[in-house]
Amino acid sequence: MGISVRNEGAKVNSNINVTPMVDVMLVLLIIFMVITPMLQNKVQVDLARTDNPTSMPDADKEDAIVVAVTRSGDFYLGQDKVAPSQLGGKVRDKLTDKPGKQIFVRADARARYLDVENAIDDVRTAGVDSVGLLTEKRQGPGE
Image: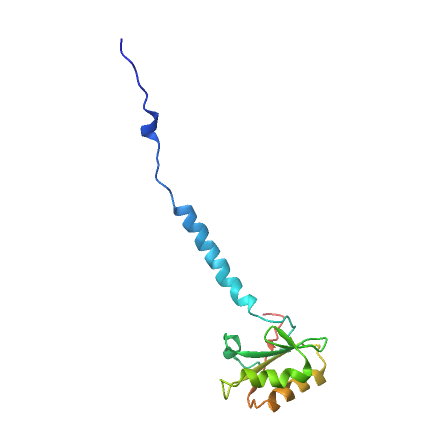
């Protein structure tokens, strides 16, 4: 009498297929690469729109010093809210190791002119010669 033995274990594939995992990791990497610069955009303001803005690529750098003026008249240095009376001192502290640095002002389009002027005055009295005003390009109806 013969015994028939079925060897089911020989058919099992024990190799790990890493292709789906690599695909998921690449998608996550791309998502984080796209979202990370958006997170560094500091304070949310609606910039004024102009027809012929000057390109200021230095404003997007990590070490750029950006002063934001919101619609409600609040001042921000980077992401930190600053009292108007302390803005000049804080800018001066940031410039101690970077002489000749340009400061960028991101003002809301509906911010009061006096608030923007005061922010620029405070930055200029802190010893900054070059102040850049950040705007957006106005989009025409066909663009």
